[in-house]
Length: 330
Ligand code: G3H
Ligand code: 13P
Ligand code: ZN
Image 1 (cartoon, rainbow, N blue to C red):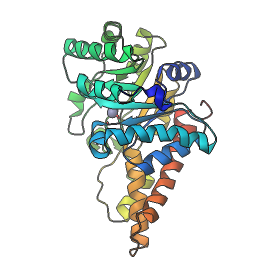
Image 2: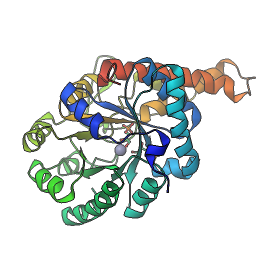
Image 3: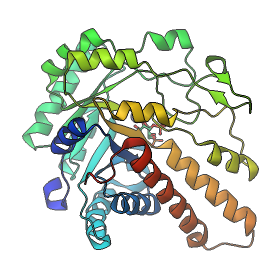
Image 4: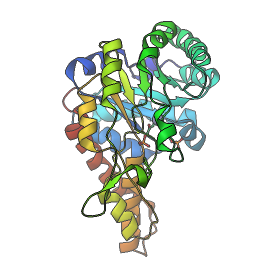
């Protein structure tokens, strides 16, 4: 058993209280490897931002939980060495079972998500409550989810029925004891968040997505005043990176994300955690493709992973300063 406190990490409680009060959102960036972690920490230190390091089940399988835990410990020491000991949370993203959550809590995670959103309301409550009881006994915070984010294969009409129902949130939060709630208001995972048929096109042919359902968010805020709300699927899918990937041999199609202004608006509300993974994947891939195309003889991974890391840092700094508003809140 390793407590996150031994690793110099914090849970989300104070972080979220400050974010809700301050009208900004904490960046929740996924990482799977050293370069992503370096970029996140460098960007958050440079902007003096608190940060949530997210580990998915896929990341655990890819990188190993012992390595990830020790990387998070190292991240704290690295931040201090860079000149700002920012608060760092190590969070399980989309925990799929009590056992996975328990394993992460026992291995130094300070926050877990239990994603019971695919179950019935009662099953979701029962599973989430079980995780909360174990987590709170270890002073670990828990994120639950109500409502299902549309998958890229969903029809618009069926996606509508998956939005979070504001009339369910009070009962869910009070019966489970969760510390934060992920909701569905129109975001979705990946780089193709909407079908082209759901979007309009601007003069340059760029897809413009339908707006997020701020009316549902406002209703949820009314039901749960001051309660921390989480937005998944919040990559903006920057055209700059999509175009670079296409220019250097990639085959992305119909990529569309959540416009930054809408995320900025959400961050000023009760949304205090914004999850971003795909944009990091796009930025790294774009730069790696460019470097390898410009220098076909290069075979030292540091020569292409280094520029990819620098590009990632630049992108995360922009998000902290201009989108989430988390800069200068460490
Ligand atoms: O929400 C999903 C995250 O983007 C993690 O994706 O399971 O491929 O690591 P992954
Ligand atoms: P994106 O795919 O939009 O980056 O969302 C990531 C996410 O929600 C991780 O939980
Ligand atoms: Zn997610």
